[in-house]
Amino acid sequence: MTKIRLINKEAFLGTVFIFLFMWALQASNIQVELINVFEQVFENFELTDVYYSKLRSQQSESFEDEVILVNIGNLDRKGIAKSILRLSEGKPKVMGIDATFVGPRPQDPAGDFLLAQALNKVGNSFVMATMPDDWDLNRNEFDTLVMPYAPFAARTDHGHVYTGILTDEDFTTWRNFPTYIEVDGKKEYALSVKLAQKFAPEKTEKFLARNNQVESIYFKGNLDKFIKLDISDFEDPNRTFEIVKDKIVLLGYMGDGYTDRHWDADKFYTPLNNNVVGRGYPDMFGVVVHANIISMILNETYIDMMPDWLSYVLAFLVCYLNAIIFMWIVENRNLAIWYNAITKSIQLLEAIVILSMTMLLFGSFRYHANFALLFLVVLLSGDLIEIFAEIVLRMFFKAKDKWKK
Image 1 (tube, rainbow, N blue to C red):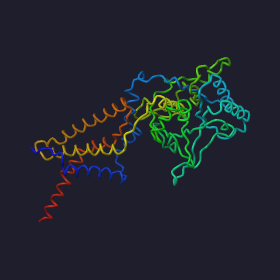
Image 2: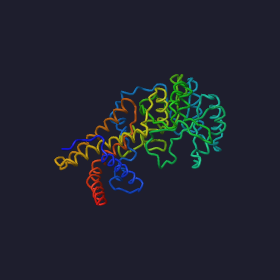
Image 3: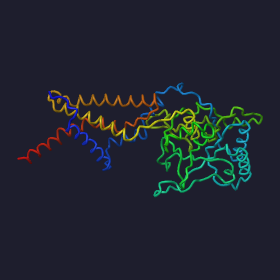
Image 4: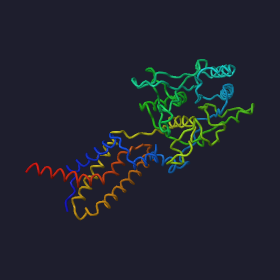
């Protein structure tokens, strides 16, 4: 029986063969039916979704008492103005709204006037929502920032509510957000970042010091983790809102009532969705996603992402080690007859280890290990090494012997 050689030229070439195969498959854009089926079933699925929806205990995440969500439902501008004024009487530290107010409403000038008055009263402690428009392919940035109606923006601050996806058709699960976007060479920070900055500037500066234009969102929870005020809470004219004192108040659309469970234009899939594969209904309103981002900044529960280079290095090393072992099995006749059984067992064990490590790193350290390439390498290595050893190498050695003769 031959010995296992850690420095193995054939195993190195076999590893290169596997990576070339994967590159060729991607470059040729060949539609493989099996892969297509998996893509349709597991579209936009990540292993960390299992941690959020199945493994993490709800009790492990504390209640967020610094952010108060206020549902605006289908209120008109007059109704929103009244809500803002009543909330401002409770002396919140900062307020913001996840809704764009572009241009006047000719059919409701009184509503425009009242909303402008309310916003001017709260001033710079209120953050309005903006949205980028007109993507410039040459400069790789937006040309236009759609601002609120001028009277609304006169004294207030503003931040973008862009999800990071150019078209709604490409948007499925909300996992990341742009901390800022560049429009005509100027940075526009996210609404959630602006609110956190006004509330806790030091913590926000620490967050921004990570220098990531795009950040993964750590989801504390859905509506169950936040204080909520619904439209009905404003029906009593004598009610006061001391609950908002020195807090972040975030207004936004959460249905006709925030307990509604229905498909909605401003409702998104998130990793908290109970249906991990083949999503049913969107599970979180956009304003709640913004609240989760604010909570992440305030509690410093950032997600660290594995760099791409480390993902490639780990995949190559594991592939090389598999090639060493699998080619050793091929070279030993007593083991070669059991090649498929042995290699498939090793691959299964490796897959279980990869899945376990993904959950452990994310759950314990909030480290998102990108093992997608590593997982693919593990799945392909057994069959491709057998092809390389039994066909490619033999053809090479035969050609070499013939050339020498």
